[in-house]
Amino acid sequence: AVALPASPAAADETYQVHHVPTVGGAVIRVEIKRDPAFDAEKQPVILTYSPYNSLSEPQPASDSVARRYVPRGYARAVADVLGTRGSTGCWDYGGASEQQSGVDVVKYLARQPWSNGSVAMMGGSYNGTTATMVAARGGDVPELKGIVPIAGISRWYGYAYGNGARYFLNSQVATDEGFDTPLAFDFGFAKTVAADPMGQTFADTLRDRAAECGAVEHTEEGYSRNPDYDAFWLERDYRKDAAEMRAAVLLAHGWQDYNVKQQEGTALFEAIPVDDPATAGVEGVPFKRMYLTQGSHSGGTRGEQWQPLLDRFLAKTLKGVDNGIETEAPVLTQGRTFDGQQAEFRSEATYPAPGTSNANLWLRRTFDTDEIPGVTLPPPGTGETGALSTKPNNTTKDNVFSYIDTGLATEEVSNRDPLNEFGHGYYSLYYKSLPLAVDTRISGSAVLDAVVRNSTAGQHLTPVLLDVAPDGTAKTVERGFLHSSYRNGLAKAEPSAGQWVDADVELLPQDYTFKAGHRIGLLVQSSNTVWAVPGAVGTMNIANGRVPDVTRVGSKLTLPVVGGKLSFTKP
Image (tube, rainbow, N blue to C red; front, side, top):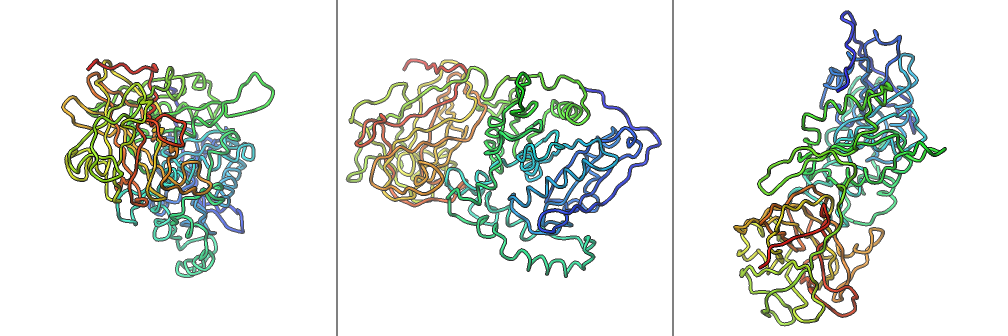
């Protein structure tokens, strides 16, 4: 780890409040803590642009970041997001006005007389999102030298929807995963402090803001259940601008983060190009690093490796310290197994892991029961299973496996009690492979390449990848979501009913190892009501062989296997 310089013993730290003019005549409140003893040599700035500062009164810039870095010659700045706490204007739900206000704050800090002109942005959740948001402006903000987005959103649509299916944590709308951020701003985080720069009373400020922002666009879009990826979401998609980024990146996320899904981090990391110093132009960031733990939304930086890595990143990007961080393997990732055991961190050159390639398992029907005319499914509660096979079914025999979706199914019920009437083979389908011959690691996203025929337009497809122990106990590895009307893209709905269509579902990514003797399992259902708002109800048919009007032979599960091969014990 790099040795950071100590603070002079007699130094006196200062705490100041600044007000930065920005878009639309709004003013951003910025609080700065620094040690003037370092002014002569100039100080870089570590900035967090946050909507949460009303939760950390009275001095949000006197935080753990300040305690570590201010004595070492870094200034600490915390700014209130546009329209929240001490900043005027209208909160923009990550839109263009909010982005421009962040750019204005960075430039303001860089030109302070005590500043060396270099700024890094860092923070978790929304605070990490704002770092990515500003970095997406690329060459417009050369003062931004590095970002540290921790569990941050890179595409707001992906926070609210999984391929058209509306996320939520449970069945209460107020705690919905995609609804909670607008709700928090409407009733909490947007509180404005009385001592604002305009000199108004608290009541007057609230009244004026209510009038000013009464028709803010997020009120309609943030709570909408229309899955179209329209201009509102396009404006809030920073990943599409990843090629414009020029600030070095240290990204952290938890593989078990189901608030801001882990794909928000991994997909951004893959999209960011790294500059080639051998070429004349600049076509990317100086370097990028990614740190992945098996933590949840608040656990993306756990592990003893994190703090030294962050120290070195800031020293390199803000002070130009030659510590070699840019030449090291860019990925540190922590895996997991069935028993919950978390692996040691692996240092890897790429994500997905080097040597990862796709291995296919075809969905095969293994029983022959017709309980409902025209629908092939097992009788309720019998727990029939299909097979995951290394070979497809090239015939029309045993080519359809079906289930009924009532809008009530959950993966938890299906996994816990497969013989329950809500279990496998009636409200969901269950497939499993032969036992694995060797430990098998996946790195990245599994994909269900499905051929389906739904009876009702707007049904969902929510597959769950399982690890099945020798005793039959199944645990979730990862899950995916698809609104069937958005199977061909998110720009507009293409409803289908009564016809066979391709409907591919990319599951959320994971770093996971199946132990030898375990089976790979797949739960196929339409409703996963703990995780997503249900779609339309009806019967769902899954092709397990050749079906009319589709060239693809059946449905298959594609796994990102490190080493590229699946090896099973013989039956």
